[in-house]
Image 1 (tube, rainbow over the protein chains, first blue to last red):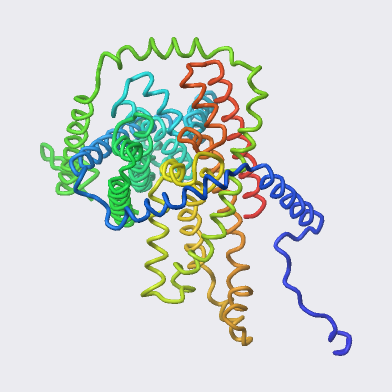
Image 2 (cartoon, one colour; image 1 turned 120 degrees about the vertical axis):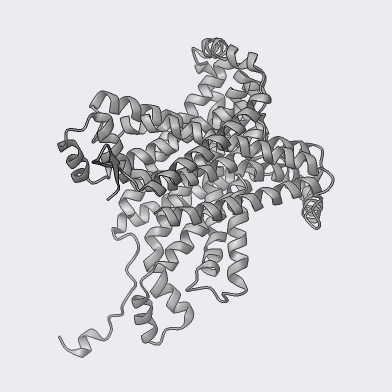
Length: 268
Length: 271
């Protein structure tokens, strides 16, 4: 090959999807879907137009937010959210540990494995809010319903990740403990648990963080906590108080996230 | 190795004495906090309702079967809306999240002192507020409907996508960027040929992952007026039409399972 033969060829960036037919099908499909979706989305533009001054009013409520007017309600709501989060995280983790052990393929026999995986799948497939609606119906308004909701959601999340972690553990260590003649419980306690403990603590802190965030939402449907306070503030059009509540939530979430991130780095 | 002397014989212990005491103290403190919190919740609870709950649950379950299948014709449109809310919301979020992530990543940000903190604040505030709360706000601003839902999903997803994306950008191989820079590429060319190809798989994975989460979240936005399948769900619950509620719940589970399957397949193909 001479230089002249190479000259007219230009380098082209390789496409992200190599197969041409797949690229074109996906592209055309996406375009068709977008056209259809945008075409069928009904938007009441006059209402949106009317809402803009209200939006401006809402944004201006953030400067300055009214922390003083509803301060005692905000403190009560936040405190209730925090209790709910603590109790739900502890109970949820306590319940999810046996499920996780059952859902680890290398530990549990097949029938237990499928049963526990089914429990995890069911508890993961429902949104917190939908569960909260039902638990509020069953247990009445207040933090108990919120606590049950968050616990159930914790089982699905924590159990699944812990089970995967147990499946990934080093079999040699567990085998060594079994070789000493340990009973099944001793084997779990000395062979398995030390291997997954750092991850358990990390996941627990992460879940605490998530539960606090979710506790703001379950309150909207009657589950107690700061969400109830926030919803009331919105329904009374007290945007300045609502802004204060949102800022408090953001502040606490940031605080919890940073401290849990710090603790996780120290543990892992 | 930690040992205890017991009647003159050495016995193996898992931890040294100090470490063991620290572990016990931590357990004690944790238990005390838990019991205190539990007591506060228990005070705010009407226990008669709680003890009555199993009977109530059985009653509710009995009212929910069989699902009212004739109602399904009225649900396709809200389901379509739900999917549009999730998809269009994710797209909108991605469009905004890319520049935010670019500004937040330490190796691409135009200014570490100025742009990066702003981008990080945007990410945190978007992430700490649930899409339902965003919807609550947006419904009062733009009115109830699909648009409020799309915007709520988008606002919530910006932080999530931008956070994962900027972490991906920070983890790229600098050698490749260096090689492109050595050819005399401009800053824009550097981004297009040095950075984008490296983060593209992560980017696609994040998008599909968030889309899957958004399908889940958009099913409930209707409860506060954000459009989608949550609207008939809310209507059915308030009118105590439990056979309709169970049908809607079944439809939601089916949608979630399908979207999870699609997202797992796509992510598997990319990564």
